Length: 181
Figure (cartoon, rainbow, N blue to C red):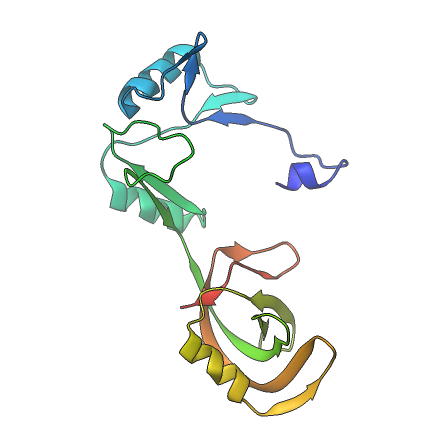
C-alpha cells in the first residue's frame, strides 16, 4: 500500500496471483481449488520479482498460522481444497484467520453525532477512534463517565481503561480497526 500512496516511493511493484478465474476466455471458477492451483502453476511456471503465484501449504494450518504470527503478518486464509470460486459472495469454504494484536488503551471521549470512542495511549497520544465492535451496554460506560469538557464534535471524559484488539498500527501510529477485546 505504501507504494501506491506516494509517487516518490522506492517500493517495487510485485504482482502475486492467488487464483485463476478465466483461462483462454472461459470461466474456470467452477473448477475445484486444487485444479485451479494446478492451472496457475502451468501459467506461472517460474516466480519472479515482478510476477509470482501465491504459495499454499496443504494441511498444518495451526503451524502455518503460528509462523504468520511470529512474523507479525496479517493472517492466513484457510480454503477447502474442493471449493469452487464463488464470485461476488463470501464463501463458507474460505475462512480468514486474522493475526490480531492487542493493546490496553484509554477511552478519553466520544463523538456527539455518531458513535465513536476517542482512544489514546497512557502518554496521551491519540490512537484514533473505535467505531465498531462495542456492544450497547459497553457504550453506556463512556456516556456515563464524568464529563471534563466538550467541543462542537466531541465530549471529553475522565479517561477509563479498556483492552482492544486491532489489525495493526498504521504508519501514523493509529489503531487499524480497533474493537473491544
